[in-house]
Image (cartoon, rainbow, N blue to C red):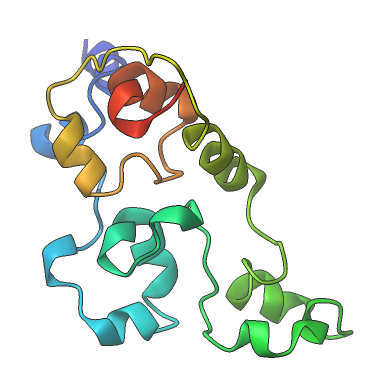
Length: 154
């Protein structure tokens, strides 16, 4: 019975597990309390870009940002010998090392549609504010199923 309940919860609204007591921690931080220094911090930038993109102006990044601000100053590091581990971790956007799902969801969500599938959840506005539409933790199918109109997914 517990396994069945867990399976059902996996397909319910994205935050249901957290509310009921699962281990899903979304968002991982309080979006309203993010500071400018966190926006500039290598330790926080990638988390903020995924969970709270509007807090630092990352809305159009699709969850993919450089953790280090200076990556674009010297693009030769993208192909530099011995620099690959560094750029894969800290310069993903500049060096085009973003996960394909991030890039794909960003392109799909910005497409122009004549009409959208209606949102199936009344929580979409709140979820969107917290990064649901850009967070790659959730699949495109989940975003489309729950909040297609809010997330602007065709």
